[in-house]
Amino acid sequence: MTAAIAAGRRYLPRGYADFARQLLIWFGFLAAYQAARGVADRDPTRAFENGWRVIDLEQRLTGLRELTFQGWTQSSHFLAELVSWTYWNSEFTVIGITLLWVYLRRNSAFTRFRNTILLANVLGLIGYVLLPTAPPRFFTSVGFSDTLGQLGGLNHGSGLVELASNPYAAMPSLHAADALIVGVVLASVTRRWPLKILWLLWPVWVWFAVMATGNHFWLDVLAGVMLGALALLIVYRKPIHSFIAR
Image: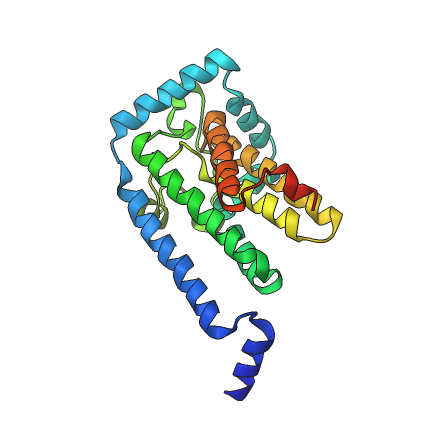
């Protein structure tokens, strides 16, 4: 027991009680968020109508660039698996690990990092309620396909995935928003420039991956980027470029 207490004092910046409180906040939020997201809006008709509107607008603006991305990734098994891994892990796995690292190693930056993620996801849930949107993978007649690999036996038909997700929550892309937040904050708290550059590239890679796997339109990604930037601005009260200069 004495050894455990000593380890807690050594490795946990604020002790066991604060660490337990942070776990309760985070996992409590995840449970409430997944429950709310799952029941926010499961009206397929409305979601598909909004999806067709997104397709029509994109065709008017730049064309469906996502189809090009899917073509690139499907030409390489390695790349197809890599974007699938990114899609499955860029949310809970990467966010969870980076939150833990910041808590343990850059504790002074933790609270605002956590709050920014929470704020972006709450605002995103409001977007799902107001604008349920079917993702590209449902529009096979246009040429899209569900290209996610079977990593760990997971796919969109898995019971765990169906239980925890809302299939019509494409707009805005929280993958895009959260990747931006993680990339910007981690770039600001790491001390080596190679790592800063890698973290700044992370959101760009995630944006590509969610489009290449047929899970988001580029307009979804754009909305997610704007959402992430807004959350950063609200919590930190400074523009994104000021992080990079640190």
